[in-house]
Length: 303
Image 1: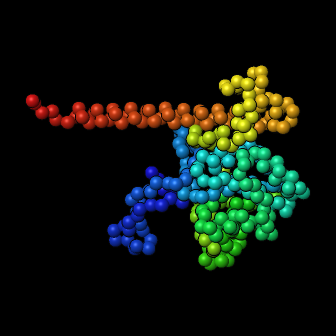
Image 2 (image 1 turned 90 degrees about the horizontal axis):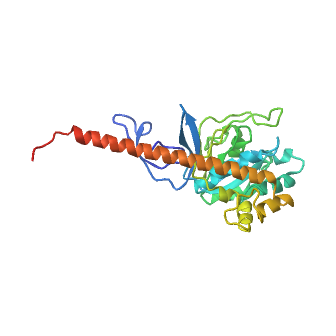
């Protein structure tokens, strides 16, 4: 397979080239974890590996302008499916009038994973991530453009503008009028931490397509727990009597938007899984036809 950021590979120097500059990848070693999303090109979809062999997937979202719940849920779906530990990092906490209140709201979306409020420029709230790096963890940063991923990278592994010669960090600019960052990362790169571990920065994502492997139930544990209390085991949480999910929405303990998001992501994940199954069957059929043609093309010996 094609190498991705974070992959371990077997490589050999190219003949006649310097061992320091030119190597050829012979094999991509099996991945422990992989953050993947669905991409569409030329009318067909494929899986894009955003980060491989990471221990923590940090879903980065800015506190201001207001976070987008749907985007957080989609990114968390990718994080849960990766096999790594998800965490939500809310940046620009120093610019929000009620950061604790916003954290409480996001906790309701985060399916039990940690939610951190950080003020990167002040160095506040970063200690849990730094502790993970000291323990040798590799952390992938994923999120939209302008949410502060590169500034967070600088705070974790180096000094702003790359003044620390031991680390390649990102030069960032002051915030724009809407409190959005104006530096844009265009490649995925792995940066070693000064005290251990590594941080993998990724370009901002406009679209977050599910690959089909996502376990939506993990992301919506609150709905899953309520569903276990429904009168019918196959309850669709629509008009069925004795539906605990609908009862929770009616009494205000479960936002109606959560059920809508659950249904939308479940449909998309199922659709992508079905498409992947169709592609796999088509690939196997094509391989079988190729083997049959090759067999028929061989000279036949008389008995």
